[in-house]
Image (cartoon, rainbow, N blue to C red; front, side, top):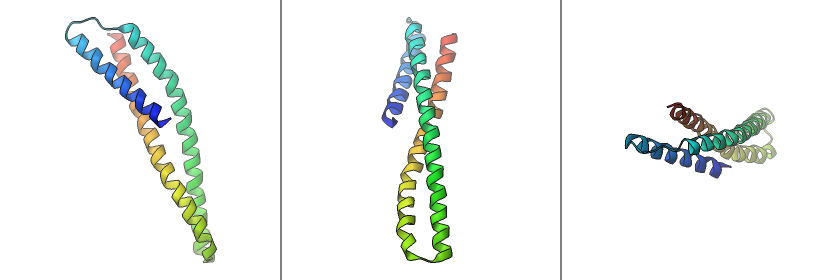
Length: 122
């Protein structure tokens, strides 16, 4: 899904650049392509928002498990809890990075959709 997000952002940025160049040169701008791309982006935005929510839930649950494992390790001082703590921490770090990427990508999509909506109104 991250590849699709990156591809969609690149496609929208490329389209906006071409649209602005055509408008600046007095050429014909393709409003039907703009409308189609906006519709496509709105449809995919729902999927990205859903995935972002799921990854937020999973990331928070892993963080809670990490804190619980750490608390148990500190309170009981049982060394057999250390592999559990290490495992949950190792799994938490990539989830944080992936969620960070999803969040920033969706925020970028919001900005691109707003820019496209402005050009649609011209």
